Image (cartoon, rainbow over all chains, first blue to last red; front, side):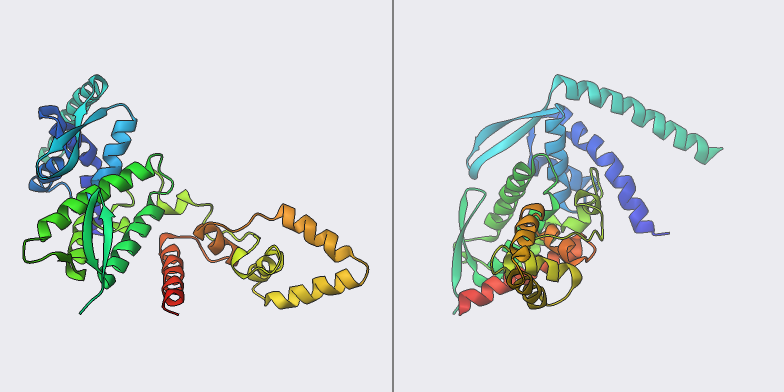
Amino acid sequence: MDLENTKAQMRKGILEYCILSVLSKNSCYASDIIRELKEAKVIVVEGTLYPLLTRQKNGGLLSYRWEESQQGPPRKYYELTAEGKEYLADLDKSWDELVESVNLIRTK
Amino acid sequence: MKITVSVNLGGYSFNIDEDAYSDLKRYLKNLEIHFAGEESSSEILSDIESRMSELFRQKLTGYKQVINITDVREVISIMGNPEDFSDNEGPSPKEKFSTPGAHRMYRDPDKRIIGGVCSGMGAYWDIEPWIIRVIFLALVLAGGMGVLIYLILYIVLPEARTTAQKIEMKGDPVNIHNIKDSVKREFDTVRKNMKL
């Protein structure tokens, strides 16, 4: 068994959920999302984020707008759509259930 | 003294050392291959380029105006290689292309003389194309059947355009690694040709 691989699989499973959670607080541009995910240590290489963001946007969970920036070219700010908020609420519930299930098994 | 290249990355212009440029170009090409099966691959790539451009800008100061190979390697290690983010969702690179190890006959445009039929057959059976050319020529001289067969094959066989098809034509298993090798080979050939 490869421990690092198992850990990576666990992280990947929750990454999508984490992106939506980050965006539920504020609309952000990709580098803000990266910073939060890195602080929480749920992402290792940044390249993982961009295909996920695009898939979530194509799936109707996110929308984006361009905003001017003083430090460079305009930035893409992502935010949750109404559908994305509902989706996140569902994930929140299922996350709580998962944590409960795992705790139940671990403490039995 | 080093030659620099000027590139536009994410809407920003950078001066970049030649060796760093070839690493960067190869990396972006690998990403392009990796995301080729994705619905919005160009959007993903342009998002990644914008982020890389932002990381490169942080490396430049008033005294340092050129991106060097260390910068490129650092930024690539921050972004990660396609293998590092291959299995998070969607098709894995193996499924994205046709069945691994598939062996199909194509026309080979790289070694063609007329339409690439003989070179494609040569690549498929791993024999020298001239042997097949001699057989065709003999068939042509023996009553013209060769022309007809050639035309039919020309119509039936697709041309090997993509890297994956070129690998399939030769019968090597198609995976991200030998595509990378193949792209690198092509890249090196182009570089060699440009130097001549």
